[in-house]
Image (cartoon, rainbow, N blue to C red; front, side):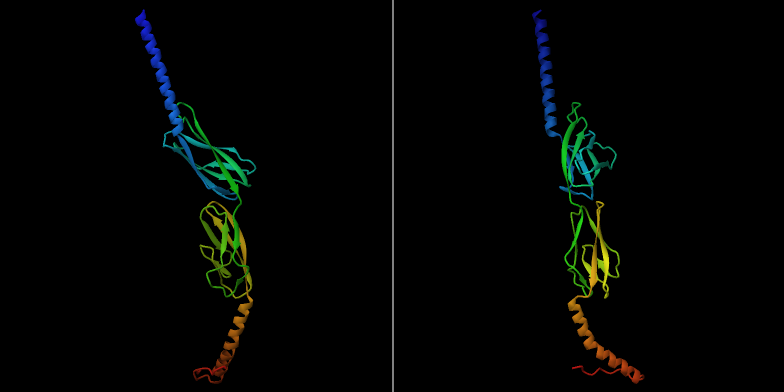
Length: 246
């Protein structure tokens, strides 16, 4: 009888130790598992931002994201890839500034049938804004110093002019006038995140250009007139070197 009681006591003690070990193992897993999300610190209101989630360390558990609180942003979350184990991709879009809260869930992430959850906060800030470092572009402007500058751009930017005969724009936003007439063109900037904004560039004669052109015509006008008269009056004779003007 004493032997049977001793065996029963030993069996119960073994079960207790096993339960303690399992609990310690689960606690250790909950401390080590994590969900990491990659996104911009401030998300422009007019952009489309890709959210990439990963489980750390890599696991064979399914990871998903959901929108917990959109606040006043009007945010939407769209899954961009089929459900994956240990990683996921979503696109986040918003229509107003504010704060968005997302929740990442790693199914059975603790190894004991309990999901591991983590909250992420995303700040939605101002959208794409364009400025220029000049007021009016002179018709003789050729120096690479006049530029369209985008702010709050997310991703790669591209520039396009509405009329390349008026102005051209390079990939860095530098503007060059291509006309001698007073005119305008619209420069549109787009980003790989779906943003778009436009700004109008005016081209016209500046005061110093009027002076330069006047000086040119003052010098070249008499020479051209003399060459024209000489070619008419001496059709068979080559035009000689023009006489000095001053």
